[in-house]
Image (tube, rainbow, N blue to C red; front, top):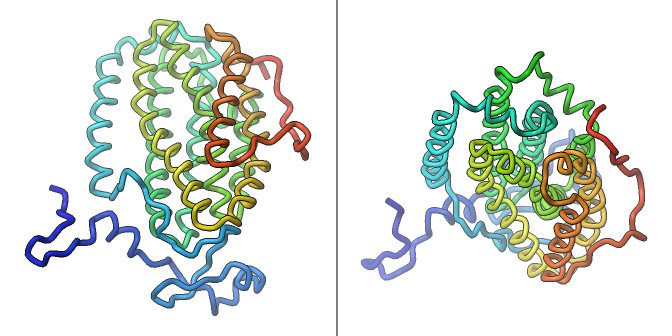
Length: 348
């Protein structure tokens, strides 16, 4: 049972389980006297926790109240495990009920999805997990650390389940072994995704990493991913794959909420954070657009909706989201730097 937040005997509000595990959490380590860190890093990002422990806070964000961001779901390890245990049982049931027919069912979906896209997606989620691990390790704030750690669990779960799905649907359909690594490294439609992940893993600022993935990438990429993993299989008569991703996508909804809540909290915390976050959006928006543009041939091969219509709707909704926070959508005139060359076809 959940711990009560109120003590009637002492007539005072107790600290809840979530607050105990996050708000009161101190940082991970001290770097103030560690000579292995460059002096400019120590000087530029050093801060102290309420306990006086010197810590690194590698972010350009201005944060005085480390607990201003809160996970609205108030997840703790115990509640997360209870929730995901039920979800895993549902996924197992989907696999068991469809296992004998998964290869036949998957034969109806385009080969580009069955034999290429689904096998490659394990690498996407492994990369997302690595970025979330970095953020959870380097943020000085327990509430952010807690949220990102559960995102790591989600990403590893998605990768594992996609490996299992790929194995089942290609068990008898594939004429030769499928090399997911080669697909991820060489198949043109996912090169924009790979580029986004690899560039995201070079980011030093944990705040930028969180915004780049939860506030920019996911709102733009996930709708396209849902079309590929849900809409197209449904059209092809493959209910198992559709329900498979619908269950996993519940995790992604939490990530989307976390991205918006984090940005809202940072804007409320300090007005200077607006320019910081706007700069990050400018840096990552067009990379995310290029990433989904690469998937154009995959969508057009099996979707009932044209890619241009899908993309236009996604970007319009994203712009509306930015407006809610007083942020601007980058214009084409602001676009600069290297661009991923979107492909015209599915073959390498």
